[in-house]
Image 1 (cartoon, rainbow, N blue to C red):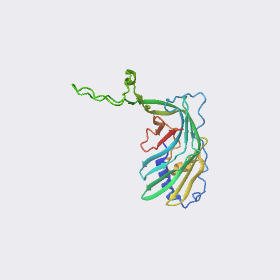
Image 2: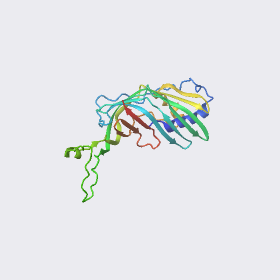
Image 3: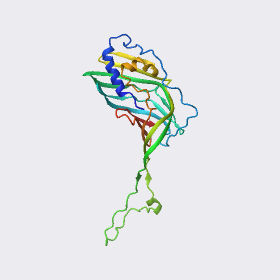
Image 4: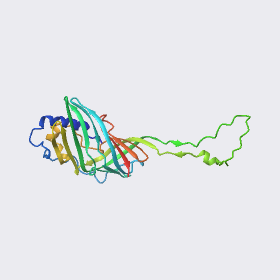
Length: 263
């Protein structure tokens, strides 16, 4: 779930050095080394998802800020990805309809901008553990205070008499729940793709719809192995209430926050 905010900034800094080198012109492909990070989850793996998480969700906002020794900046965008979570913890993250993540940064004193676009899908089985769960209620309006010794004033409008049951009841709002989740077994990233582009200070396409495994190797070494390749499905924290689900890496203060709405 910790999506590559720092990574994008670091790789953007790399673009300053390689912008004039072969393979970085717009339309050029990234590294050709192809390594699959992990295979599909084993069929015997069984997980759990809490009730408020179960369903199909679409990203409406992705945002975050990051800082490293040589770069700092922000990233936003990324609407349109869908995430389907089953009761048994099976999760399908579909990035095929996702809009680019746009970033701006300051890298070693230079202004940098660009975009990172995920495509394809990723699947995993997760185990979710709720840490807090609260339910709020809308209590019925209280009766007006009566001053001792003052007789009630008749009303021209007939009053509705509420039964004891109605007075005791309250309208319950959707429960708010927070917790953590972690993948069980292996995450299948074999169908995930990544396009990484710079628009400032030079135009360069560092990866062009490349398998996520292509990042492993030269590109990873050149960027300090900072890019994380587990958007959404890595270990993280969640919160949900009603039709809104929020996901965030719980061990990375620079991780992205994904806001999703149920569809």
